[in-house]
Amino acid sequence: MFAITTSSQQSASQPNHAPVIQGGIETLEQAHLFLEQLEDRHYTYLATPIVASSVGQHFRHWLDLFHALANSTSTIDYNQRRRGHLVETSRAAALAEIEYLIQWLTQCSASLQKSVTVLVETSLQETQVCSLSSTWERELSFATLHAQHHFAMAKVVAHLLHVETDAAFGLAPATASFIRGQ
Image (cartoon, rainbow, N blue to C red):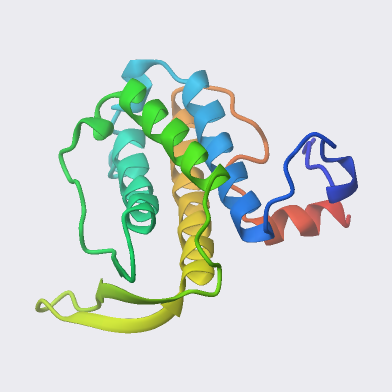
């Protein structure tokens, strides 16, 4: 059974954030709750060949996207990755980063419609960096949905380790809406 709430069931004490910011906060809170359920050894477990990366490597990747947003002014560079960073092997470091990002989003004063330039590589054959036009809101939405994709992969690893997770962990928001409508 899925425990997916409707907007009318949300706590009245929740601050009234823009939907994309609230979605980002909810995603970060989901990640924090998931990591609280894991042991340190689960965080670095490689479930190859089923899943090629550890939970820690998946978390580092999507956290990099949020950091690209948090550290941006007018340019978001998704090519700046922290491969091999402590956050890949330390659950405590990941929890601390998530707490920092929740605080950052809670206090975020960025204009949602602010124009930004996004730098992203697009070719496997050679280094080709594309410069794309976007908005800060669109990129926060991307980071949030991309994190959900990595949550689904982390959930597979947790399942292989017999760790129970929340049924909604790793679901896309549109999937949760579909389930609520059933």
